Length: 322
Image 1: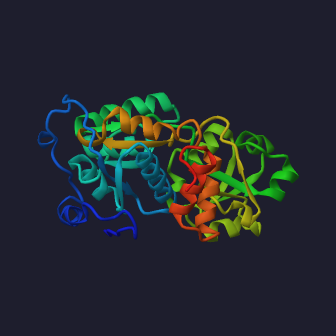
Image 2: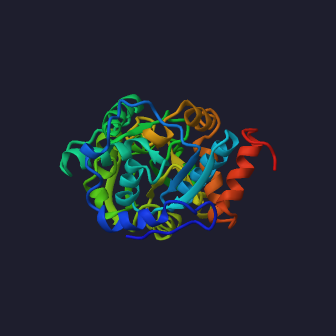
Image 3: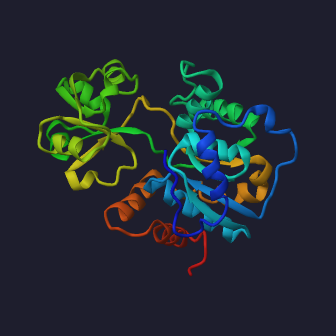
């Protein structure tokens, strides 16, 4: 497990998280130690925002910080690359705000509460997923704010030339085309319901083989680019598809879970209307395409996440130009 600090806004709570990393990798604070979750929500003016350490999470954390600062809060950002560490820290108040993904976080909390074999509660239904997520989060002293328009979920891409040749825009189109498809993905794709089995059952796609090159890796995309494979498992905010001449096929029957971006806050410290309103300003603006574009600017253009985040918020008039 690793714990890395960002070069800016990373002054507070690091010492406590280092200690937490040594003691809470498998079990977070017990629910009995969380205190009364019926107490009034807190409104600390000094907030620590957690990032999961990858580009998109860094960008979201930077946007959260800028919006909260605009609303009168003082913020720090720390990067904690393992959910087993940052989620207990969120419960304990060492971290106050974290960007999360609705279905993935719901299933993670469900497994933590009910065991690794618990039936998944995340689904393609956003309303049902949010209801389950909030029910799991509340006893832990966590509040899940409203999702916006941006979603980072599993997605499938093919070569643009292949899509044009066979007139493909959706996964249903691919199923109707009756084409044999080698799928570049992770090993687990053979069994996961959202991957090969789901593609076959929901869309009637003829998956003749799964090429175990990983999810959205360079090798996987190159295999589709050169025709070795016909499709690759990636994500909806993949910023590099154009570089490989690939295009996404729409998940028109909603096979994938509702992994919408949601802020999760420690209720006792950041559960106020002030925090909710500040972060909610992003909901009507930020789209999946916006996230993909910002990811590209950081990953391909080598811009700093804080600069990209600030430019985006300024362009949407959510913060004044600096």
